[in-house]
Length: 178
Image: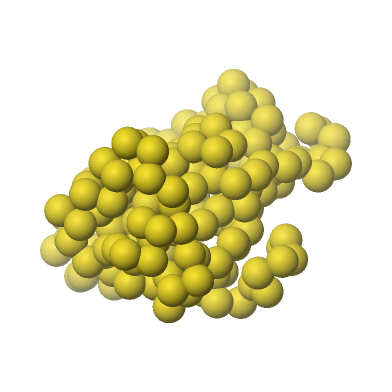
């Protein structure tokens, strides 16, 4: 029979407006640092300190279980279109200098600080449109899939790659954008 993902795909309609909005962010990348904690409570405590004006590096050293925490966190580059929707929405709607609230990932809670944002010269809209439609379709599927229970996910062995995040962090030299 059709897989649950396929049957969802029929329900997903990507509108022209969605595509235009996505084009605004197309190929945008942000420079970020992260604080990774095991528990929500630690994440919220770290977030509160940051909100109260503590500096990111010292909070990172104190709370983050990330290998780079000792040095105050490593700068990484994140490109729009490569993340789980929840994460992506948070990252790309945060202004430069801002921080995200603790976001729940499979391996803990993560707070991002956005250090910079830039958008290289984009392909013309007409050329980018096809890619963007496919991408939005996939992001929507993920959004829906994430609403489906873990049981179904386990059964279909469907796993969104928030592992990409780890991979992106590990693979990038700290000073080079993708």
